[in-house]
Image (cartoon, rainbow, N blue to C red):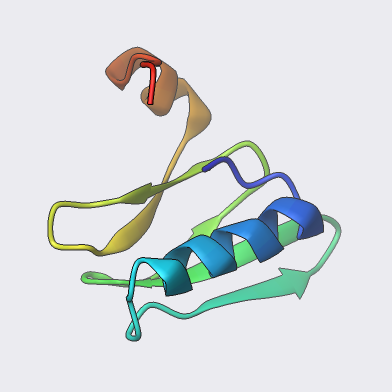
Length: 78
């Protein structure tokens, strides 16, 4: 899911909870622009607007920069 501010923040948190992840907590901190802090296996990482939140193979969540996401993944029918 792509993080673009408060609306997407709420959807991402719901998605994380629906996936059963009780260790990954997400918080939004408002500076000059919103960021989302995500507890990953490597520690706390910040997602900025346009970053993607990815669910890994161990059901962990982490942010991915938009340019890397676009180069790495393809859209598929769900």
